[in-house]
Image (cartoon, rainbow, N blue to C red; front, side, top):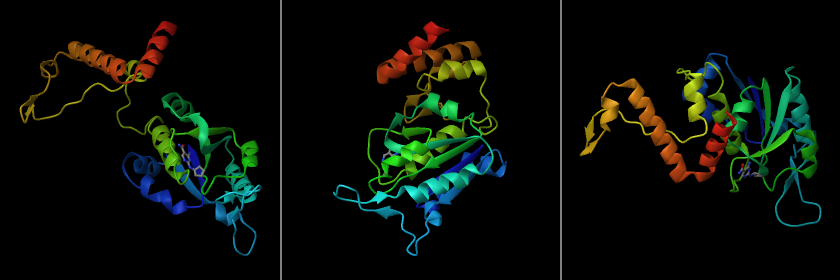
Length: 232
Ligand code: 4GT
């Protein structure tokens, strides 16, 4: 997968992609991430990317021309591109969106700053995505959240390719509880079943815990899980 990140702060991207699972995916060439500096697509002497809002009011608005030129540049990589605008007004990002995007050959992710980008940018993107109902100073952190969630789903990126079965049960549920050594830590014991070596009992317990937690802590996700089971 090729991922272009269009931003006024390309140097914000590197620190996040330079570590762990994402770095290894880059090294293996499973993915390529290219920060694209929107400022490189300005034509005036001052390399201007923003301007005052029509109608007045506080703050500055990103001009559409440099952003659209940066999109046109990114599209030239050849592959069919999916162009995503990170924005608090977008559809809420979730695991099923991450799963769908993980099958795309080329993502172009547009990050805004200031009060946002000129409204007409929306004619040049395929979808608008929000990572949650809060406002940040730029779209870069949301873009990195999206990239992290998407990249780990690309086959070969995580070492432990879980079985299709395990995946389908865990997808719409919260994780079951995890434990490692020691078996007693400050008086707190690991549940006996996990020490039993009885694989089927362990699987059953984990699934029950996952379902129970989801029901208690995330009713909306739990409803989604029940609906999925009805469909199957
Ligand atoms: C929040 C999100 C996002 C921002 C989100 C335009 C200028 C938007 C700053 C940008 N805040 N972008 N994508 N919740 N801020 O996803």
